[in-house]
Length: 280
Image (cartoon, rainbow, N blue to C red; front, side, top):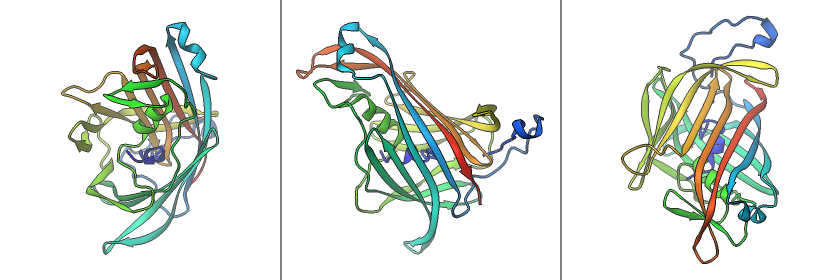
């Protein structure tokens, strides 16, 4: 699962990221037309911050395994240039992210079409994120993780990452679907043990640093079996200026000791807000 997703962070994923009314400036709440497209111009950029919080640690006896329950990361995503892949002109979306001393750099390759924003390929040379490396591990979705934050990284990055070789999406991935229609749903990825769908759930006004943005909300639905996982909540909010906020909540993560024995549970959240943006 590619660290794109921060990525689209801010985009999408991800990625990712679209109609916006700045009520702080005009004093009105005028609803813009809804069928905007994702900003796709070269040199457009989004600076963002992430706040990761471990909550509901239980029982209290395992709290000693956590030096802190809150960590902050910083990143920037930008469309840097056009290139050609397999005779197809694509635009490179670069994401740089710093988290607790770890730096990740990813690149994704997109086309903008009438039906959506399409990812054709990706590349990552970033190091793995996750500050907690101790004697406990975490079980979620049938996989073990050495850090609780590795679970967030997996949730952010819905595709396998190759550190040095461009990997083509087969088939290409529709990150954003046009037109924007409430309750429209489509498959983001379909693998043997995990299917991820996206669903437009409605337009909302959100406030970030005193500015109001009129956004479409996208929910990601994770299917480890027949039904979507109710313990993994993933929301993107994007306006005509791109992604503005991402919210991830993961509940009932199992903590195990070095022998694989269950010792407790935690919940985990990550909130990402765009703090500065420029649409060229």
